[in-house]
Amino acid sequence: MKKDYHDYNTLLLHASNDRDPLTGALSTPIYQVSTFHRDSENPSKYDYSRSANPTRDVLEDHIAHMENGIQGFAFSSGMAAISTVLLLFSPGDHLVVSKDIYGGAYRLFTQVFSQWQLEVDFVDITDTNEIKAAIKDNTKGIYFEILSNPFLKVADLKTIVDICQQNSLLSIIDNTFLPPNYCRPLEFGADIVLHSATKFLNGHSDVIAGVVAVKDVSLAKKIGFLQNALGAILGPQDSWLLIRGMKTLGIRLERQTDSASKIAPWLKSQTWVKKVYYPGLEDHPGKEILSDISTGYGPVITFHVIDDKTKGLLLGKLSLPAIAVSLGGVESILSHPATMSHAGMPNDVREAQGITDRIFRFSVGLEHPQDLINDFENTISNV
Ligand SMILES: *Cc1c(COP(=O)(O)O)cnc(C)c1O
Image (cartoon, rainbow, N blue to C red; front, side, top):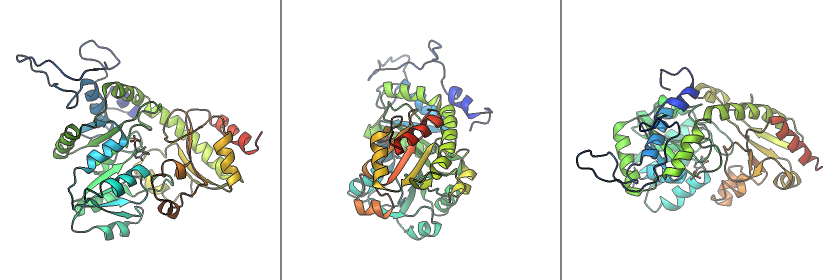
């Protein structure tokens, strides 16, 4: 975090251009424009909005500050951000990738980048020996999520960054589940951090976007080149929505995480719940590692229900949470990974990872936790 702010919430509001230089407007103007007049006497830094747009610039600058990097990039989706970053590699390169990644990223590796001859070995990212054993002569990077989806396993960021530095590998972290108010991987020496900004960063379930941040100048140049060359940029309107949404990131997450820390033990005490996965619970195997690198555990709870009847009640009768794909919004969302986020994975791979159809992922929103608990109670007793 920038040293001169006592608190991250201040940085969220004031770190970059929080006032329009032309008018003083507190809300960043939406430069809904594709091209710019070229004034030969006063050349502007802008010429075409794929290359740079003033609204997107404010967002990208802000992302850089939020992640404590030197440059940020905004893309039309989380998948566009991931795809663009993966094009840093060449055919024949090899990556070590966590087994436990977002289903869409798994699909991208196995069905798209496989055709580009990008070699991948999937490993259990919590097993340091397995990571080391997977490194080959042509390995160029390690790709993982610190907090995995859906079981919220914790990757040992510091150790993995060490392994990367010892072997000259790029560390690429999809930190969608652990936003920068809690954890900033670049500060621990990681090379590239990215997010599906669709989730916590925007927070209002009204934008699809992806962001990337880096701290190295030559890497920034390469990603900037790819962003312009591939063109999967975020438009001005969505950039504005994301700028607005991010102002309340810290305060939203504080409240949502606080609610999750009340709901997780409650779920654990219920007879219809077989197991609860929440990194803030004492018995969570990654709690200690996470406390070392993150100031919060986040608002996502995964749980396993005992039978199909309970599964049916949750999917059909809850009134407050949306039953939906995605997470991180101000409204609570209950997801069913087997048919949603992980539907892109072959059944056998998915089941081998324990993602059966009795697994639920709960993204706690801003509703009062007691109202959410009451809703679950009424649903299960089916009144
Ligand atoms: C949603 C998600 C993505 C994909 O992002 P989109 O914005 O939907 O393209 C990537 N990684 C993780 C961890 C996600 O949750």
